[in-house]
Length: 241
Image 1 (tube, helix red, strand yellow):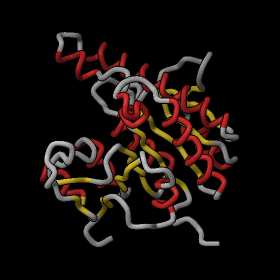
Image 2: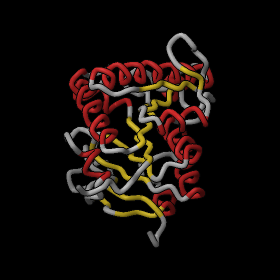
Image 3: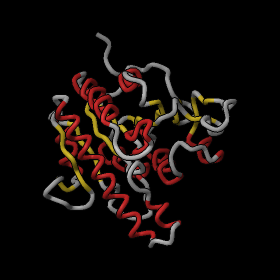
Image 4: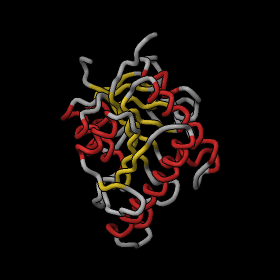
């Protein structure tokens, strides 16, 4: 049996992806699909951690644009990621996977506090780790959380799961002629302002040589295809990789 290309991964799931076609909140079928796919790769021996966004429930930057204090709005966004993490935990456990939610903001009744060594140990024991509450600091996105956690736990790759099948030169939902990139360098992403992840997250990945693969989460089985090395989505890394 062919082995997965990566042994330890961070799967970044946008909040919007969990909303499915309804655009807001949590879509049950999407939660079940994600849980089944993640459980499948865990059963293949892959050490899996998840970072989940909160944009399906609340965006700090939106609250700030409406006049709310930016730090307060961002903390609300962190709480939204905890809600999504708990929903994913429930779906994963129903799919037969042992999970742990580790929160950057202490809330012991529902999650463990984030401790780097504890996260690694959970994964080594075959548990799926879900990182919640971002970095615990305002002004940082969950993209930056994914890059930071990937560096801390020495993940081999960040799998950036979205509702679109890669990175395009313009918005494919607006421009039918938008062209998809198969490979990009970190500097391409930064210089062109492409919507892979924010500049802080991209720089952190570049500094620590963590590749990023952007792919479509809505197609069943895509997580496994990415791990097996199939050429789907867009690969972001160094020029010589």
